[in-house]
Image (tube, rainbow, N blue to C red; front, side, top):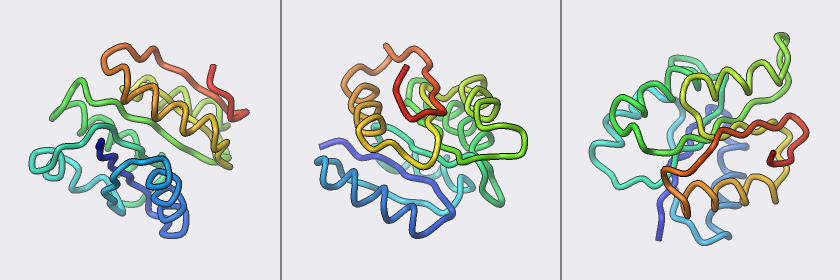
Length: 137
């Protein structure tokens, strides 16, 4: 069973993601920020990372870069809500720094779960996708 690392500073949203992924049959590991992501990846078998973009201490871009330093092939899925710079710009920034997918909040659950399945079932064959409307492109 694949383990997914969820990194989000919002406890209620993090719990929501845990519930969704566990019901879909995945094991889940959580972290409040990307500060310890390198240590987690070096000590645990992780199949994918789901990270929020805006977090204190280490944001989603810093987190994605850290993941890629330790495990370049490990898929990262970025998530973000509305932002002053525009959600689409933020989603594209996640892709530019190595995420294989970026989805907007509020989360489109079927699109999210489909994206998770795609990146886990097809490692290394994950063209970048973005969606501010919640649909996988």
